[in-house]
Image 1 (cartoon, rainbow, N blue to C red):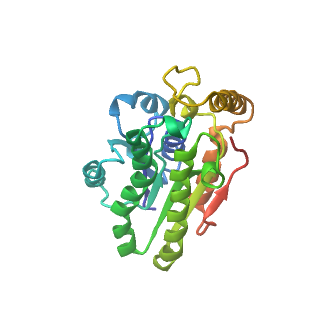
Image 2 (cartoon, helix red, strand yellow; image 1 turned 90 degrees about the horizontal axis):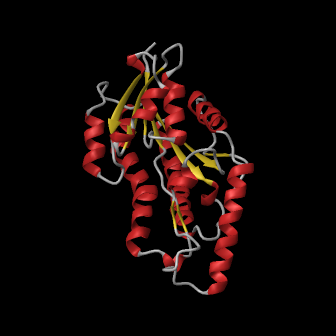
Amino acid sequence: MEQKVVLITGCSSGIGLSLAVHLASNPSKVYKVYATMRNLDKKQRLLESVRGLHKDTMAILQMDVTDQQSILDAKRNVTEGRIDILVCNAGVGLMGPLEAHSLDTIRGILDVNLLGTLRTIQTFLPDMKIKRHGRILVTGSMGGLQGLPFNEVYCASKFAVEGACESLAILLQHFNIHVSLIECGPVNTDFLMNLKRTEASDEALEVDAHTRSLYDQYLQHCQSVFQNEAQDTDEIIQVLHSALAASRQPLSEGLSGGN
């Protein structure tokens, strides 16, 4: 049986890394995984996780979803000349009072979470349409379903991804291409540690005292939620794998939890 070729973005850590390892370690070698990341200096963690696996089930590629040329270069490095399953997982968070964010910071979040997802799909979609076959999985967030305080920009990006996926799903069913949007709550990954966050103690934080107090309370709340209620990555991987295995899945795969 011919391997299914999978390309995953954001594989240096978290859900992307775990999904890449899970698929590449399938004993029947069902999948050939192209695990991509913006900075290949961070590939060591992935390499250590796949130690001992067959080389014919995984390759690591550099790919920056904010750089169209980088996406095209990655596409050219897929030796099979096709992608059967595209997993758009790369994303970044931003937390803090809206008035504390620079426009450059806001643009950066939208460039990764929204435009990066659209660029990636836009690049690989035409070939899927020609073949009239494919699956697109997008890692969304509960922040794309409900607003979260001090996450205005992040939620805006995820709400937009939700709309894009719903719109694509309606059209792509006519091409036998199925879209699944996986709405995650808090997950035990490095996401909270890696997100861009204004510290409540930052003296340069030019907001009123009441906002500063509310933000400090919210940061404590987030720490508690991630510590006590976050889902294991394995649970997310099970949902993603179920979406891959099914011939047709509902557009939105909701997961319990939220921050």
